[in-house]
Length: 304
Image 1 (cartoon, rainbow, N blue to C red):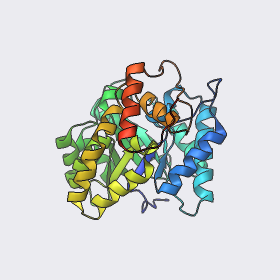
Image 2 (cartoon, one colour):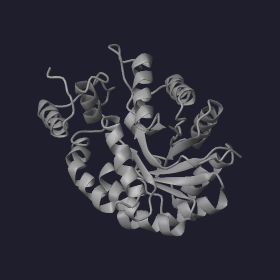
Image 3 (cartoon, helix red, strand yellow):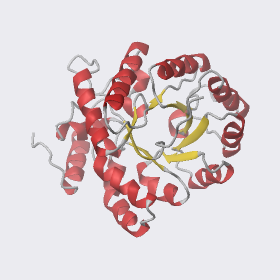
Image 4 (tube, helix red, strand yellow):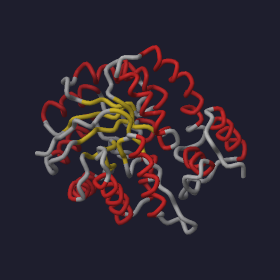
């Protein structure tokens, strides 16, 4: 079983997905964007919520992961690729995970099933079924605000003890007490990653190992440095940086993610701000706020 998780720590980018004028995925822009993330030192998370995976066809899902793996493998840095492969249909999640494994990802990120509202027993059975079918690391992704369900710390503990390839947890519940309990209940090699930029400082101070970040789409080097400060136990310096970045962390969710991040990417000349329906672009007032936020961080933005 391939369980090399030495690079499953630090700053990971929940990659936004560029669209062309027809609303199709833009391969060349995506590859260039990934290279920028790799140069900054970020791990890569394609096909997550921030990547608009819910609107992707299976072929698009395959393409995005393949492009990401190819860029990672041709780089000197060889970043960890943690591909989104979740579904509320366990059979589909198994299929997507197998496919990601065949394409050479280092691990898969699996959202708890949405809409179905399974019990804790059902959540355990869901992850157990997937873990039994693949041989690469699995990171459980808990985001109750998106899914309508919450996997409890005791369920995560049982999964981590019963399946060797269930090795991590993306914490996006906003419940610090619950996240701390996951850290306390799981073994020392189990990796807890923040799923909220604004809580990364608190989660890492409690024993977390990094962040799957939205902000790093726009400020990858700075997020890498921020996490490195905490890894090095430079908590005073990290607290200063945490405070300086709070406006960005907040305003990236001023409207539904990833619309604010993609608008930020557009005014940083990285890609179009286009999102897929049912999401729409930002309101003018939100654009003003995002522009001001990036200007306050001394980023070079276009003036259009």
